[in-house]
Amino acid sequence: TWYTDSAMTVTTADSSTLQGTSTNNWKSALSTQTFSLPLDISFTYSETDGNVMVGFAEEDSDLKSGWDIANAFGFYIYNTNSKARYNNSHGGTVTSNSNGKTHRIVIDAAGNLTTYIDGQITYQQTGLSTDQYKVYIAHDGGTNKPLENVALRTANFPLSCDLDTDED
Image 1 (tube, rainbow, N blue to C red):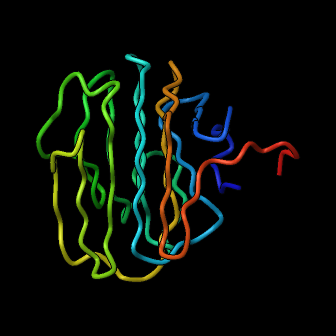
Image 2 (tube, helix red, strand yellow; image 1 turned 90 degrees about the vertical axis):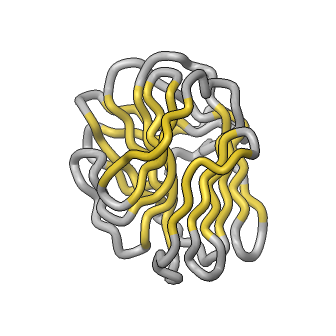
Image 3 (cartoon, rainbow, N blue to C red; image 1 turned 30 degrees about the vertical axis):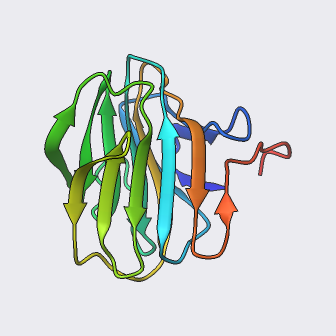
């Protein structure tokens, strides 16, 4: 389940698809479950319009109305471009035509962040917290951009998105 802004929903259409939907500008969501390091999530996307951010946020992160959760790390994906999303910013190398490519976010047990697109390192950062993390997703209204082929691997077991049949 998810903590969300009132204008944001998170859904799983099937066991490997994750979608955040905002009805009004940038809105965010944090998973209610926390995870110990190491963490590793991978996904693809095929929708070529719209904006989404996804990754991991430190467990004590506060839900904000916009995308700007301070200690969140992962990807900012806009249309068919991807770049790193870290702290309260986004930057680094832009990967164009990244739709259909495997995006991967890894935070190892020592707090080292590495992002990959199709196996190529796109960003690295050291010195992250070694405490627990939540999954983070933000969406900028407009066109939905579902994340596909989602696989989350945590310290103790692999997970995938679960179809929420009881709407909790």
